[in-house]
Length: 638
Ligand code: BES
Ligand code: ZN
Image (cartoon, rainbow, N blue to C red; front, top):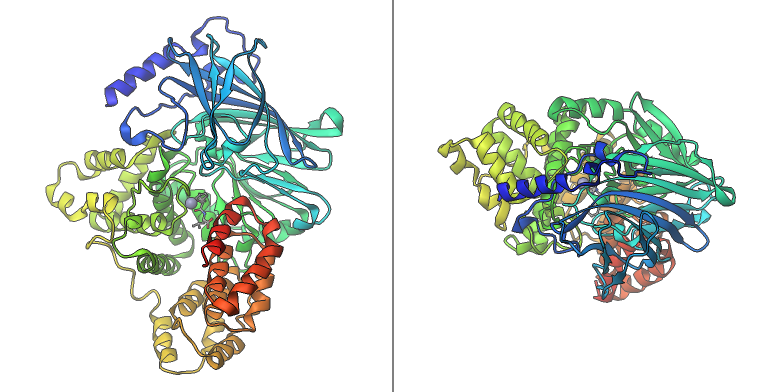
C-alpha cells in the first residue's frame, strides 16, 4: 500500500511543471516552491462524493481571478489550475455544481475540449477537460445565483443595514458551486486569488491577506489578493465580503466584523491569543501564520467554520460573558485536527470533529481550569446519550467511521461527542503524558496529509501501543472506531462536575420551587444542565413559574434560550411563541433553527401552523444548509 503510493508520488514529482526547465510562470509563486501533498492510493481513501480521479490527474494549485456581482448574485471569472497527471492521462475530471462554463483553455489561450456530465442533485456534475498535453488549464465560468456555498445577504440582513454581504461555506461538498476544482478533502491544493468587489466593500479570504485595504480595480470596484502556500483541502477555501472592520487582539490574532458588531466581538474574543498559545503548548506549533476570526451576520448557518487563518463565526456566540468561547477553542483546534491532518473522505469526519472536540476541551481546561472543562465534557456526554436515545443505542448512525455519512460531512453529533470521548478514554487508559506525546507527534507525522480511520489505528498501534498487548486489549480500538454503540471502557463524566445542579434538579423534580437565587450564580453550562435535566413534560403553571423566576423567555444567551424554547414549545407553552418567532427571525444557525421548527411541527394543530407561518417569513433569510434541513423536516411532518 504505502510503497505503491510513494512510488506514485515520486513519479508525480518528476512530471511536475517545476521540473521542466524554463517553464513559463506568470503566477505569483513559482510552482516549484509550493508543497505538493500526497494522494492516498487505498480503498478507504477513495472519495464517493467527488468525480475526480486524482490518481490519473490531479489539481495541485488553484489561482482564482473573480468578480462578485451582488445584483446578479453571481461570481464570474477564471480558475487557473495546475495539474499533475500520468504521462498517458487524456483528461482531468473536476467537480462542479451549477457552474456555467464559458471556456477552458491552456495557459497560452489554446481552447481545450471539455464536457459537463449528467448532474446529480447532491454531487453536481463532473467537468471533464481533455488535457492534450496541458499541465495548466484555465476555466472561465460563472456561478449560479443559487450556488449552495454562497449566501448573498441584502443590506437589511446585516447589522449595518447599508451594504450587502457575501460569504461562502465550503464544507462538506459545497465549494464546487463556486470553484471548478477537485472538491475532495483528500486532494490538497495550494491556492491564490484576486477578488473584485464593489468599491465600498472589503473582501477577506482564508489565506494570507496580501492587500488588506484592497486596490483600485476595473469598473470602480476594489480588488483584494490572497495566497495560501500550504496545501489545503479545497473545502477550506473561503470568502467573505461586506462592510467589514478589523480589530487586532494580539500579535497574531484579530477579529473582523461589521462595524456595528466589532466592539462586542473583540470583547468576547479577548482570550484568543492565549488560546493559540495554550494550543501550541499542547500539540505543537501553530503553522498557519495569523489566527484571525470573522463574526458574520446572523444568517451564517453554523456555529463556526475552521477556515484556515480566518475562522468564520456566528454572532450567536456573543453572550457578553465569554461563556460560549468553547466555539473559538473548537475552531482553533481544527488548525491541527482537520486543517493539518484531514479526513481523506467524509465518512471519516470523526477524525476531524472528534479529535477537535477533544482538543477544544483541553484548550478550555488550560485557559479556564479543570472545573469548566469537566462541565463542558459532561454536557457533551449528555448530548451523546441523548443522541443514542434518539437514534437507538446500537443504530448504525452511532458509529464513528460511518460509511453512510456522505452528505453532511460531520454534522451529526455522534462524531463530535463519541469521538471526543474515545480520545478521552485513550488518554485515561494510556496516561495523559504518554497520550499527549503521541498526539503531538501524530500531528507532526501527518501534517498537510489526508488521514483515514485505518491509518489512524495503524499509527496508534506503531507509536503508542508498540506491542503492549495488555494496553491493546484494554483500549478496544476496533469497537470504538467501527462498531455502533458505546464500548464498555468509555470514561464516564466526572460526577462532581454538576453535583450541585443535579441535587437541585432532584428537588425540583420532587416539586421544589424554581431555584431563582442559585440560577443567577450559575455558569452557562450549569444552566444548560438544569434546563436539559428538567422533565420533558411539564404542566403550564410549572412552566410559567420557571419562566418568571429564571427570566427564561427573555434570555439573551442563545444556548440557554434555545434549551428553554425546546422545552417550552414541546409543552405548548403559549408565551414562548413570540420569543421563538423573534429568535427564528434573528438568526439562521441550523443547530437552533432546525430543532425548533421540528419541535413546533410535532405539536399538531397547536404548533404546525405556527411553524408554517414563521418559516414562510424566515426561509428567504436562511442559508441553503439550513433550508435544506428544515424543508425536509416540515415536509415529513416533523
Ligand atoms: N467544521 C464544523 C462545521 C461543519 C460541520 C460544517 C459539518 C459543515 C459540515 C465546525 O468546526 C463545527 O464543528 N462547528 C460547530 C461548533 C462546535 C463548537 C461544535 C457548530 O457549527 O455548531
Ligand atoms: Zn468542528
